[in-house]
Length: 452
Image (cartoon, rainbow, N blue to C red; front, side, top):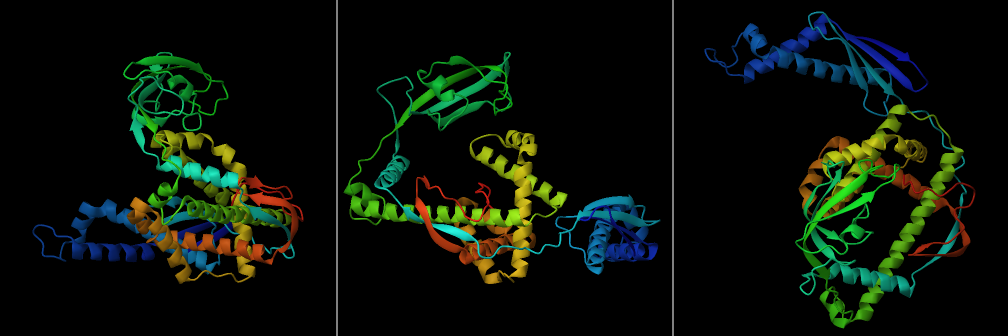
């Protein structure tokens, strides 16, 4: 095996590998021997089919499998021999795949930069008082009340009002032609601007059950939904049924029916405790992110482009999944997410920077995540997956996914170490469930919405 390593930039490597006829021939012989033992051909005893016939019947399949196997194994061997660790899967470029001559290909990839994290000790964090107000408890209780309220069909009126739920069919048209992906059939919608987009709540208020209606609405050229942007849209709709939440009374019976509580007061106390835990977690998360921002600012590094691209793809996938969860068709969600590819660039760069710094910090501080910790995390996630438990279990049965989870947990530990070592000082104001007081993180740096 001939190996040539080229450096086109400080982080980019191109490893060209060429295998000679002997290596290729040995692998082909092994493949055909295995095939001969497993295949059954009419007129030949098992294991005695001539290679010439096997080549004629299965040659393309064997050739493809041999090329993939040789590329995979020789790439791993070359990277190990030259102590190269790609930050993402190498891009394989084949140059010669005629196995009668040679197999020559190139593996192109970025390597992890050498990082020595500096100036991460003695960071200062203001200690805010965290509290929960009675108004926040009231709001949580009302959300619980609304979440548990059954939907009842409205019998005493036939027109939609704000706050109703309605079973609706609708579709958008521009220039008399339907807009792809806009059609909705028999979907339950909450008639509220917080629940549905594109001004549909205003269009549907006043609609009469069973009566087809139309309404026109113009959208500006910079409208977020590109399929509607700059268009005069005709919405065609029909309301099939109106429903309304029937809110239960907030009393001791409500508390008894929805938990191990003897009174409404006990339920309020439990909600207050939960809100306090959540407020503390959110406040701590902001501090952790603030600390990481400081360390990132103090430790600029050259970022591998392939790592940024991987983070961009991940952000697109996350955004598409959120759109699908809101009811958008899969293909439209993926297309919409891809159109925002460039917008994710800065976030992808920060995520890549964060991962590199936290990995380097974990190396410096010998942060480890053992198998038991990974197992407990997987068990918790599978348990929380509900109907998707089997899918989650299958996902984490794959070694590459477990490795990614372990790396993520190791970064969490490194960030927790920063948080635990930070000098906590009395800060101004308080942090409540409803928001964060001023003050931020001392020693410079800005608070970001981006989590590591």
